[in-house]
Length: 373
Image (tube, rainbow, N blue to C red; front, side):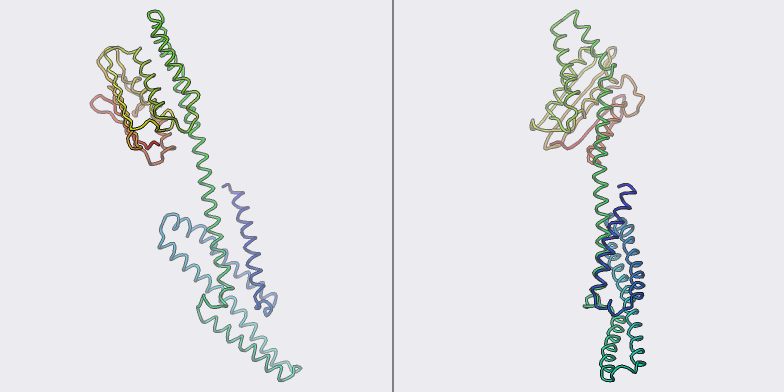
């Protein structure tokens, strides 16, 4: 939530709070017994307490204690803040009443125009109210009937402070979700541009072109598989989820095309095991790792290997790629493609995935573990 909207929200809430609590104070009979200036002065002091309590809850108790799950300190701070506010406001109110009643007694005693019996009755009433006010000042009972005047606005202030914080946190959560979706889209588009760049297309088309001269049947199959890959990348990757079966099919087509470029010196093994066919996962999560293996592991001069393994069991996908390092990547984690996928995984599976990439004895290893449904 931006600064302007936040200010407007606070202004609206404070306006409602001021209206409700002021009406609440006026509705009590004590208002009729207080001079107007005393009532206004008392309310200004009380509102100072409300403001301090509100922003104590807003800036400290909620974000520093409740959100961070420090529940004992949260409850303790809330109770102490409530009791302290109650005590201060109660004293403001009773001090004003005591002063008012004492002045009334003095004025009645000095007034000679009032009938004696009426004066005695009125003095008795005011003296009883004075004693009650002094008793209220010296006792601390938040459950007493007179305490409702103080309790209700304090509770309302606390609830409003927490309500605004909850609303802002919810809005922040929604905004972050939209931001993640935008970043995910940008990341996917970035990856699509990388996957469909001229380097990828020209290398593949060169392999197919070399076959056209010798074997039109193989060339036709290769063109069909390339068409499947491009169709998948252009029309399926805008979805949130695709079937694992389809992703495996695209990897198989990609491997068949790559086999056209490699010789028998590069051993390619692809193992897949799934306990059911209806698993789904985000598109283009696996293929970049396979491409990376061919980019840095295929060798037509010396012996090399590329091993790919997919296990999808009980809603968990384990994906392993191992290749001999023939061409060293400038990026220690295997190139731009892998770093892009790592960012996507952070967005899609925040702290809920395992991705390990490492080199050992001249071989490069990739291990990915995610939940699939």
